[in-house]
Image (cartoon, rainbow, N blue to C red; front, side, top):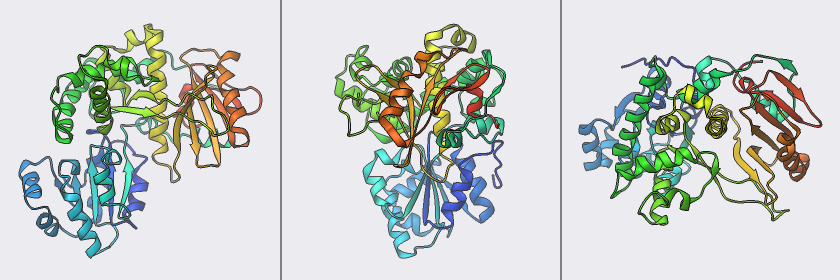
Length: 416
């Protein structure tokens, strides 16, 4: 379908256009159904790219049988969709690029994280640009151009009053960010889409990546992970319901991470102090998937203040990641915790220049205790610290002392 048009403005589109102007191959990777194909075709086809999909069994068989010959017959500009299904192709692509090193030869898309598959990542090192496409950010859904990340790194928020999200917050968390799910009108139909999606991911992409003897365990493991989102990763806790070794569960977690269904958030620390907790946090890749696994609709989530707290933290982290993916300079994400129980939900770092903290609260008020982790992060980060923000479901943007703010949650994605 030439000329595919996305109904949503994707923050990654300008970066893809820039990348194909100076890089031989650009891989757009991210979860299946996040919009990779639509983005690649929207950017590539007006520029003369030919589209080839490895979801077509005949094409897949031809590429696997003779990867070198397959690549040799490709047009000068080609979109190769779902390349993780043909790992044999990467060496052939490398050889083709080395023979004729011109910008923009290939746009690749993949539903597996090649950074976690070293032989794939290494084969195109120095020849391939790598872009991560997430499910839709709230700013993409609403069409807004948010300023939150800029504000947190400059330490400048405008004081003001806005409306609470209230029940709409739970609706957004449950809806998630997958375009096909959001196209369904009712929450019940969206939940059905997510459940089908999970089954498809496990039966198709996971099976392509590894030989898993007990595929039926993976949906159950994913549901356990959903109930542990925004907590420190503890393989023993995840292994509890299963008669499997901790190593097997660890391997399965890594496999689910490869297909972007779960996400690890590493700990932020500095060499100056030794009292940091260095374990990663576990987060689901999308809250729509998590809520479907937990069997929660928006009214149920709104009533369950414990569940909404952890899912909101994941929701905010993924919104920030999605917004940051469109920025020209990278933003790295961490969590902060020390052995004295000072913690910050999300730490953002911009190289060695800037550190900022975000604490997430589902409540409509902010107390002094909500700031204690941000104060500790500020003390540890020193001059690198730009701002600490408590995102809460209140109405007012408030400045506390130096570079500490309370900011309504909707300011995360709404234009000022």
